[in-house]
Length: 480
Image 1 (cartoon, rainbow, N blue to C red):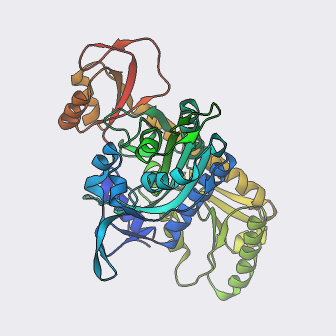
Image 2: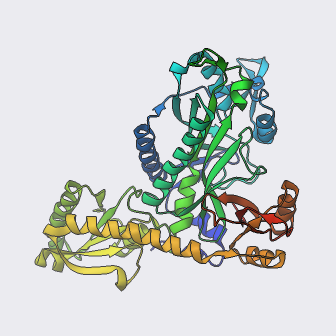
Image 3: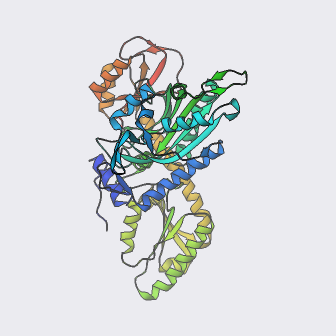
């Protein structure tokens, strides 16, 4: 039997590290802050990637690839951009046995290199809109790394688009935010709050940044994805202009948007429990694990035959199923192992089940007898498995919504604000403070302004900090 992990309530950080290692998602690389994504972890990322990629292509975007080495002068072209990224940059100063005339930045994000190319590609309104996405790795030197959440190198997608009008760019920015929302709710079973970042928290070089903020199991916020309206900042910096239908020259309006392997961490921390991972079926690498049970060789042949038959039935029904016929470990060990790996559905088959031509189902999200059902006819396993997996997916989402909503507290005073944040919850309040006020709150409580939700109550209220009239409600929390 595998060793138990530290309970989440006792030490959430230790629980997280133990789970991702024992579930064989990652290992540590030789350079501080880097991670090796193991096959099971990469399969989870592939499912995330494939579901997003399908959505991007359905909205007219095409995949491309741009160089990972970027001239340092490119980064310097946009003032806010260089200021925002300078502390995290990795520079190449020597190559081919000699010092380079100009340092190269290892890609922290691709706005600059892509705008260099857009300047070549965009000449007329007929070239617009230009809708590009890139799947790549990026490097941002992290001082306090944590696998999947903050690593020196990570995987992601970054969309980059150019448009003829500011209205089209804003429409694209919000459309892609909606694509992320659709993905996290329907595939990852993670409820999020959509909102606009404050000027303090927006992307370096953006006119506006929109975000999806998710609540993790310890109450902290995770910025799960962002969509940026870049305005004309980068097109002006790189001299990109197009001939309009009126015959004038104009700088295009642009967007960028991204989701990274941080999403894997979000899935783990939203749904995991003290027994390990709990994976939403639509993203789980293995949706159903079949575990045989026998005591002696006389029982083995019949059990194995039925296990393989059930496996083929499930695969034919479209279920990602796997039969574990290894004989090195006991059935009990396998139960614990696949609980740790978060497999949504376990199917048990023993000699008595063979006699009845039936199987036992056990769902990962409801441990013990509550989540177990005996006597499911072997001929019905495909249909029943699909029903159970859909119910598990929905149950995980509903559980996460209930947890999130019960941990967002409306506050009206600084004292109540500090109390809510200290309690590990999110504070929602009217806000008319300045950037300086934001920084002061962060210094005093550790909480940041996560976003101004797109869904606002309307009207006005009193800012909980300054007492001034406020037209927007903001959400604050401690974050990863």
